[in-house]
Image (cartoon, rainbow, N blue to C red):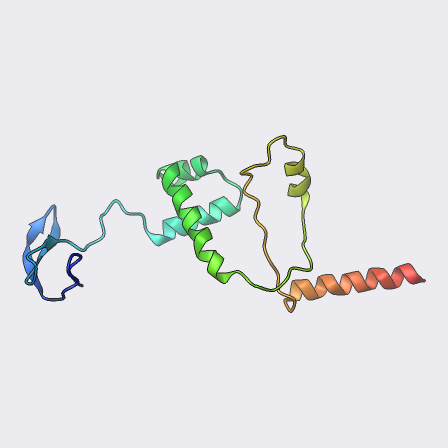
Length: 144
């Protein structure tokens, strides 16, 4: 644990504040605490919020279920989405599968912010290979 101000590791204990250990840096004299506040939500709550969002619940309803602010839920989901940008594949998408949500959303007057989730499948994934096999089979049936 390093000093948040000067990043020095030379520190000593300097009492407790609100039940949390306090430290004093020898180099700059800064007093600080490093323990997580009890009001911070655990990663399991954040993951549960993500699962509920992927199941179709809104931010406000997720907040009510988990007992947290809907703004917090929004920020967690946004952060998870930003972390997924690094996992994004550079391969070109050839097959896209849509379900009944497409017709439901296309019938709405305002589709902005509808929260569509698009999952990309690589060329060598089992689902992509099954879809390619089904297309070849349909083509062969059409010839006879």
